[in-house]
Image (cartoon, rainbow, N blue to C red; front, side, top):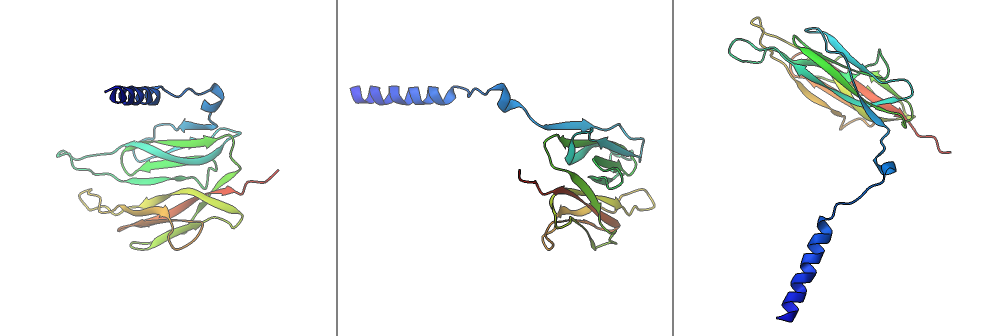
Length: 193
């Protein structure tokens, strides 16, 4: 009976020790990444989230409010969610009819990054955006010119928005019916000191 009590006490001590929260120092909680929120777009307009000076774009996304018909059916698509090749250091987003807010992840400790725009690809084809050999692909996005029916029903979607499985260091985007353009987010190799 004594061995059982000792075993139970040891188990209780081990469980209590596991339940004690780990403490961290203030230095370990410091991050070099910040989230930047763009302005709310006009209906069907672009929103850009621009990284501040001294930081590099390392990713992004969006939050949108699409449009619906009187029965609640969706009548909208997300036409753009990508690093901007025209506004380096910014993430851009656009809904076809609704409003959207772009978000950017910006890192003050990153080596330089830049966006590359691929060629537009027609329905069923894939657009590719490749990084230069001296850089690494760290992400990407797409722009789509979707197909809509006469009644305003979207007949399109992005079927691929991913690193290419066929081409190294390349982002791929593909629309079902319309055209798609891939955007690659590339980062320079880190320089050893």
